[in-house]
Length: 407
Image 1: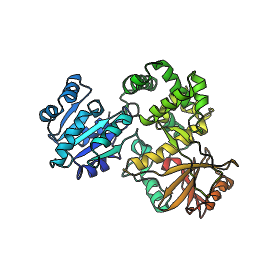
Image 2: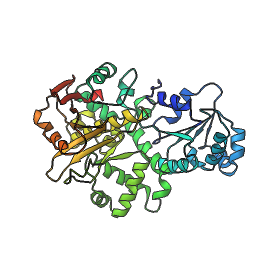
Image 3: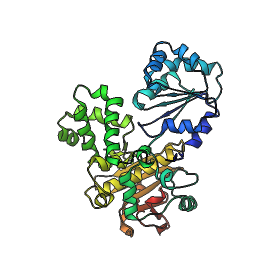
Image 4: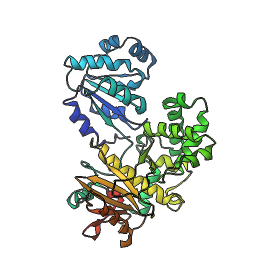
């Protein structure tokens, strides 16, 4: 089983050259610890707060903990001992060397608040998600996905071309390192175990009063609606919980890195836009598992084939920015006349619209909604149809045709 090189390695090295403390956060089992071990120089210590003895010492005697485990160090699952942050702050203020403290944490919803409160301005916080398609299938250095012909030509050389069934194989296979690497070859057992571990270890104490099994049903109900505008009431009704409980559980799923929301693009000149967010999962393999699609071929022809393809394209776009340590200003657009744009990427003072389609021969009328952005105050730049065509092409001088494998 080979290590899969992570695109975020470059930014971890970069920030470690001038920040004394670096925190890599993200969902469970996406490879945070493995990556830091891979990058660690000789002599860097490692301690996991999954170890109860180490956790107890860190919680009760944080100063002693750091004396016994001096820098440079990797502290795994640091959210279990937020008491350490104050003492790491003291070490940083006393001139700790760049890269002294590497930390990981899975529970981002608690960890981010604690780190920002205690280490404000002293820690580089990086978000790591499941594998991108470039990391799994590509080569060379990856950059954020942009609609720029020269940069897309580079992506042609660093990506791996595939057709429609090949794309659905990628979607169905998913992006979790444990499954993709072959460490856990039985995909169904892997995702079943992953879901149980996520519920029990990350959020179990927050849903305990109602029950873990009910929450698992809730995650499944959410997966059935990936790529759709969020309807909290419908998801709640499917599972038999209140709307308030459903909202709280969706927030837990978002903050723990399982789902994310794409907010609608809006400005004062586009007054008839709908303001409901759309919901997506970071890992489409988990969606395919939860919705009971047993093969890529069945998924490709199933009821969610368009929604999960859109989910994949949106998630891969966001991953390409996160892996470069950059913010992705991504939205979608829909108005009360049902004009919709699947993605609107704001970059360098322009709006770049995208349509995502399961076709290798996109029609020109697919981009008719792009013109609605001309009514806003931010100028419209070049857009694209993201689709199954295997080669880079164009509709006109304002609209490219970009294969999804190239994201």
